[in-house]
Image (cartoon, rainbow, N blue to C red; front, side, top):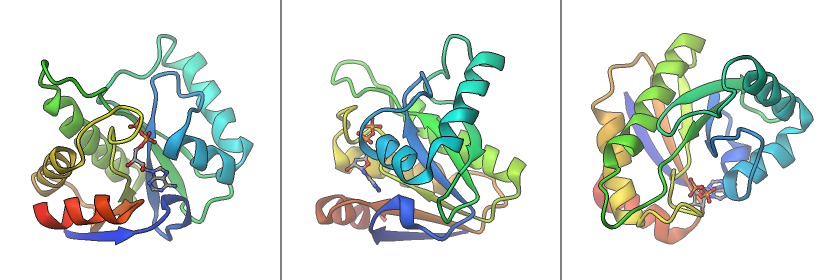
Length: 167
Ligand code: ADP
């Protein structure tokens, strides 16, 4: 598997699937989630609502992932995963690793060959960038998957250099 690190906006990526740092409601939020729903259009939210009603009445659990259409985005699918909120006292690294493993498992189920990830949990959920980069890269490297390219799409230079230092 090829791992690439790019500076950019995940909504613009020409890949089979993009990963959304969603919240457990699946009903949209701020940050990357807001951008994906805004640019992807209402078809994504519509599928999210159906998933909530059919399978995830209590919401999607932290560390799990589920796919929907990508609506108007260049990607074909959005894989929604719920990152853990950072805690300085409780080690939630396994949950952050799980987001990456579960997203790649869903990508395999879909037949997605190229998958773009944002820096999950590093925005509203407060995870320090260097630590998140280390966990994300290690999780992707250790995954057994048929995905051929994982692209981390970092939103600013600080995030990009944190990932570059861990790669
Ligand atoms: P979380 O709730 O998991 O912390 P956020 O969406 O708040 O999720 O932030 C996750 C990361 O995504 C942050 O580093 C933020 O800068 C970044 N981000 C926000 N918008 C975009 C975007 N359009 N493309 C890529 N990354 C983005």
